[in-house]
Length: 507
Image (cartoon, rainbow, N blue to C red; front, side):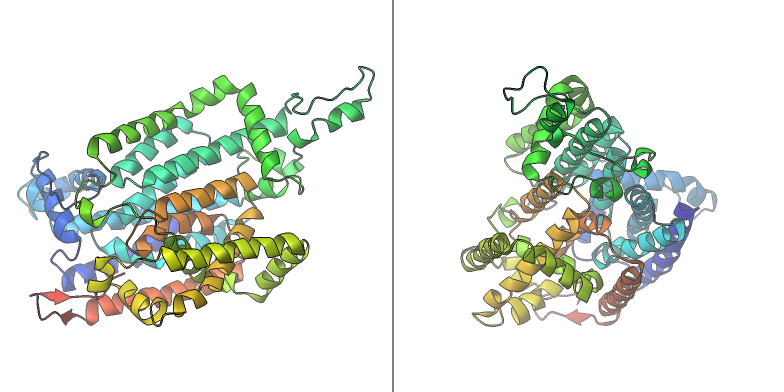
């Protein structure tokens, strides 16, 4: 019932707005001038045609073909169109993302009830609807961009890994890469999460009898002594966790031994992987094949992007990681900036003051070095005043020479919150894999685009213990932002002196 409610609410929120957007902005806008004609070429069965300015693979166009084929009999029967190619208009292609947005909402709900089985259906439904309205994903639901399709494919892949359906998860992972190349990072992260859960389940149910630290113990040693030598490989679960069909939940992770550290997690993964090498290899071989295929593609293509390579050169843009931390925590600020969260974070640091001081020092040095030596302003960022990032860069980050340094403590605090929040529910190795995935997907991107933050933000939000009250506040925040951005897009057009046509504000 919950998934039906989510689908109905998301559909009711998107379809009327989609109709309004198509009425006011009927022609392709921004990147749509590349995507829409390319999809229309595919509708005409011209699969050899390719626009060299398009940077991503044609996965979205094939989704649109499937959607158009499913609705064509209806349109043809009512004589709305006379041919299949005629059906592939800008509004119809845009509506592909509305269908995907509904699918995405259902996936969010399914993942939430797996990760948090103690949450009732009504609350899970509300939380899923709120997260479905995440401003970056919601806005591009009404334009023909790859963002919604990319997120939907990644969430579907992740849901299947939670259900231990590794083959189907890898197939969806391959398709997510076919939509957007950088999703290979989240395919690898999902595989890592699957391996960690594989390890956890085997340690929980069948503790591995492997002596990593052999010692001279007499054969007549007590069972307690022998058990102690393997204590780092054992994990206890509550009865509730043992009865749960899916072990990859926040409750399970929280039930781990509190003293378990990164090295303990890594040791468990190595030992269990070694003792179950055949089973692990069979389960995760498709992910490895996908990685090898992607590497071959990069070597053959001469890079990751397909077109416009000169504008998307890989650069060491470390501040991008800092921007993501602050932007993501701002999008859940009722939870992030709450007094209770600040007290919990302070208490965590106070337990080990010397280590916490060292961590803060290292993170601050990383932040200052990043903004000093690796800050970059892409030509698109400086020249295109249609994007909100244009104004954020000019009026906040680059307001004066010291402003970017003043922002560093905020960046660092945001990242400490992210790590602290994820660490409450996930193993430390999982958190480390998440941080590496964020860095791998964001640091090489020279252009500041908040759209790039969508997938890592969803992993953060899904694995955060956000209270129901804060979900309500977040919902109000998202509703306010969405109304503002939609109003600016539809009702505040402007013109450029050097170019004909109407310009509109966009993320």
